[in-house]
Length: 319
Image: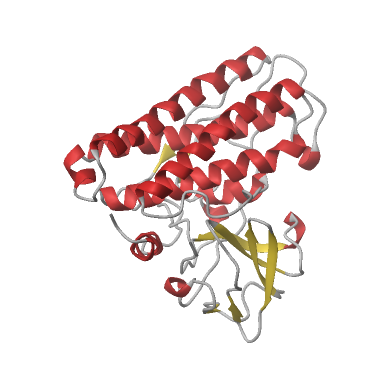
């Protein structure tokens, strides 16, 4: 099996974000804004009144559409990966036949999540969003990179459902989401084990707001069908001189010390609480006591509220 360090290195090698190509979803050097790849904002058609808008102006149906967008992406990722790589490629990584079967099962359950959410949205009187056009070329460079990317995608999936939970008005919608997020967490624990990592690196998982989640997803989205674009704007990407050094205790350097304008802190959204590292002359230090998948952002204050985020998130994997 590849080591955690080799997995991180593989993810960091993914290409910078560009309008027609995916980015690595870990800390990376990037020169284009993630918003350049984000679909134009349009609203989804609904035949029945939606629940009152929750935080951020999102209705319960909006949140279901957001979840469906993420599940479409994950399902397509696995479909393309397993169509591209034979079982022998995964065996060469050290995965057992049972682990390969379980990994394929992850893809199958993602497809089931898609159909379940489609039914829920249609039952609410809305038209479910359709799959987008994706570019997984960098993420599916080889079987090793596929497994590494799957580990991050499943972590982001858990964070997405947790972050959306406070915005949901309907207890039925919240229960439906909960039945999915527990499975997403089991996916991630399994893939961490298959990657040679600790299955439960922390006592808590990390919520992540819809805009931050969409920023990570937008890195893979080329375009979406008319009517299937989300009314969410991606944040700009983080541009670093030394993304390969995004590890605990290391010093990170912004590609341009003056950009983004107003940058004051590197924020690390992690299990157990957020940590902030002051940016000095375009440099910040990755703090101690980070575990699992951690979301790094550039902020103008010690807050990760949307209004305070200037760039990111990117994902780092200290353990």
